[in-house]
Image (cartoon, rainbow, N blue to C red; front, side, top):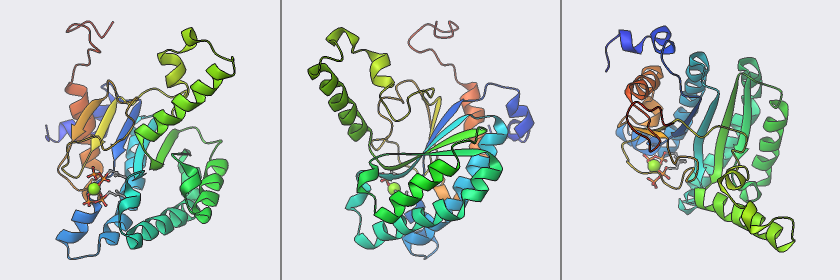
Length: 252
Ligand code: IPE
Ligand code: IPE
Ligand code: MG
């Protein structure tokens, strides 16, 4: 899998490219620990990796990335680490706006924005507004995001419409639910990448990942360089997606 030809970006571009890649940026703390550094150093390093990931994905022709930055469960972490992460998000959304605009990145923050500190909320709104005209790639940043939280909100929204008589029970179908998610109007992820060695979903995109190909890597996120992403896409290209159909049927 790791031969040079397979990892050549132009060669990979000759094969099918996932339109949407989801990534769980995991392993920051352990990366730092192996270097005798505080966990926060891993988070810091993770930002540079995300920029590189977006750049390479854009070169490949990927249209959407959804990246898990902070889960609804991550509030359980020590206050110092949560505060560091919130400060980091605030700083990155401020400092990287120009970079995102240069690279044609439309940033879309998904999650429970109401729980974020007001300074982060402000930056989130700004970065979404300032980058909204960009069209090379859409990057959904999942911040205070949980798949269950997202679905609970969809259920509430639909239930309210049913109660108000705006919807009929027969209107409730997969399209209505899919179209009520944060990722409405976007294709579901073709590929989920989880670096960091854990083999679980951790409450990420529970609805959207129904038929995604999954790629686990032991490499910690701060070490997940260009070649790691190319390896993931190369492996994706070797898979056969069947969507419940039969081999060779292309899922039809
Ligand atoms: C992922 O890295 C970043 C966030 C969850 C914010 P971790 O902080 O989970 O790093 P590990 O898994 O402890 O190594
Ligand atoms: C998932 O990583 C969340 C993010 C990367 C933001 P975690 O480190 O929180 O996941 P668990 O706790 O190992 O499942
Ligand atoms: Mg982790």
